[in-house]
Length: 115
Image 1 (cartoon, rainbow, N blue to C red):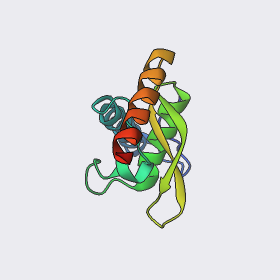
Image 2: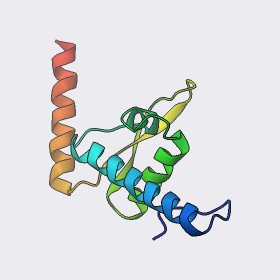
Image 3: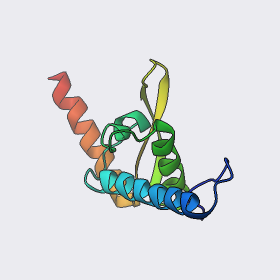
């Protein structure tokens, strides 16, 4: 799996550095989700945890790659994004038992909010 998409035709040390950066960004994004299991995040929310200067597109690329690799899953939940448009959220890939636990927790939270 390609971690870095060399669309600007880098080579040598520059390409090697870019590939290394992309792998590190993926590691950071995965660690972000692993520290918050069963929670959902939009790309811009994950991006806030990235090192200063990281482009949002790099965070999005990392999320896409991790989804393709099976580490993350896109959810149907949407939230307002950076520019007010609805965007999807992602979470760690879950088992059926984890999904059932998550649904139960969400129902309980809704019930508490209605009281």
